[in-house]
Length: 282
View 1 (cartoon, rainbow, N blue to C red):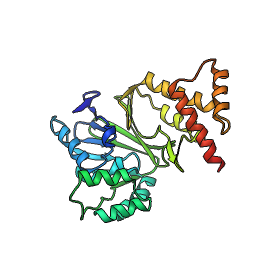
View 2 (cartoon, rainbow, N blue to C red):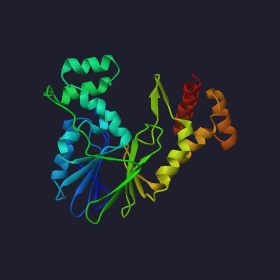
View 3 (cartoon, helix red, strand yellow):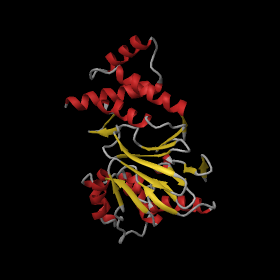
View 4 (tube, helix red, strand yellow):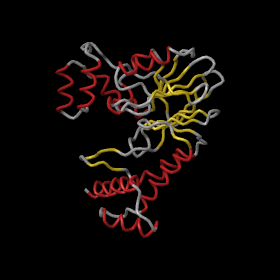
């Protein structure tokens, strides 16, 4: 079931048990645009089935927010013009060379070219894939791109991100809705989950220049501006407490500066920034 944000903006909720991110939909008078294509062809088909229940303009465009498999593996299903930034296009080129039979998938996992969860999902949801090939994107943009769906504009921009180096966001100005993909998350390097401290403030500045009343991160429910402001505030307060690879010192610095204990979220972020200090020192 699609969640209705406004008469022209919808999203399909994330499903953590199936590694499915939230998928967005923006509708103009003439066309519709989707944000992210799902983690498998079946995920995309489920999304299209929900879209088909409503009287909406045809899907003409699909924006891929970044080149992580759970956001693009369903893109062949839409028959849409696929839009990516330059870096995402570079990263997708490897996936376009892949073959997807069982033995190939197992080889990619064993050589760390594919996540084991991706293989599991594809085997479960796409049994007939011996001849499957991932399509190539159609529009490759740099910096920003504006798409007019018919009295409904979408601003597509590549931004700094603590999650990937190819993050794209989509803003709908007259709705004040912002689709963030996974841009506001951290990442795992050398088995350590971390948030890149040096990129935090530039990322937040890139995002907060948009006047967004509602924002959607890829693995959350939609958030209003107060909830997002709190999220950024907690990230910044946690980052300011971390100046070394010592978790104990960071926690103490947080207590002194804020005159309180860190919340559960802030403690999680502090640990992620400490891990970043560890990784940067290696």
